[in-house]
Image (cartoon, rainbow, N blue to C red):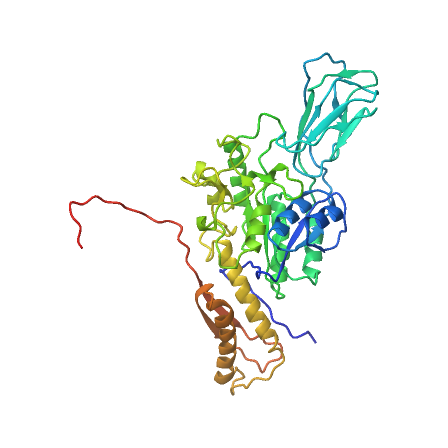
Length: 487
């Protein structure tokens, strides 16, 4: 005999959600160390101590900065991180060494590595000093002693400086841009399974490493399956970032947007907010200004807001510690500013950043979009988050009614009195927890009066139809000169 159950079925309306102050933000991604089971971290220091570095740690820092505990799931990886071409710029003095990258690079995150020699160096002889920058020189470490080493290892990248007795000039720089490792579809599925099995309360998950359309699809399938058993959840992911591995020649904006439009056409989901583009983000871990995905910030902002709130509302103020313009305020192909191309990536269903006329170069979200198909009932993340809350409230109420007796009509259908009692009970819960805020414009509840319950195994369908709040996305202002006014 099967167990009594309540089953959730996705409708043309969508879902996503986090109860403010109640849930952790689930984060799955790669890191250089740490457990491979879901683990809660509540401080940046703890995140670094447990996981060291990698996309998982950076995303956790954003969540923790908002006061949201991070439920971290370190994913296994198969594809090693990638490094671009090393660019060596020699200093003004004579040199005999030619530094190279040796071995197979295994970087653990997005870094723009710059190693700078502080003084003239004779390799193999103590006295040489160097600095390291992980963000293209925007921030630099204190000088460190080279000692007699002939190699330097920076986050999985091994620089061989030369051989003993060879020389390098002060001011010599070694620069290379790198990307983090990637997981297989099976590894992402296993991480999802672990998070859904965790007893820790979470409603929203950040996928820290960039995803292909195929990877988004396998994650989405896990969210669909778990929704059916009463776990309505959402995930916030990112597509691949603009390619900056060739220093000085980043992927052009037009090439990137064209590639992302292809990705956008290949994946649709009511479970997902998918970010695209990149930004310069000041890390809560070490203060560096990294080339970074947008979804770390998007996930933290969503998790810290009530379900009905739109994180793109200008009245919230600009986003802190993240930028989509260069240091001089000008546009750059490194980052994506939706205000510059009419929102091409937004039209493909991606969540992006923009600047606003009259608000300087500060960054704002353009629209927090669900990656749903054109014409779907719900479009924005807040639509889905509220719908998830409705599902969860109704699910929990109905769960307490499993195996309860109801009166039947002569034909085996539920009596009108018990039908109305169920509808009224769910309605009272929704009025108290959703409508009083308000989070919806209205709702209707209908218990199917035609289900024959006298037959063993017959399900009782309950449908909730919700009308979401509207959001002012286009306002037309007209100022007109007239010869006189009507007082």
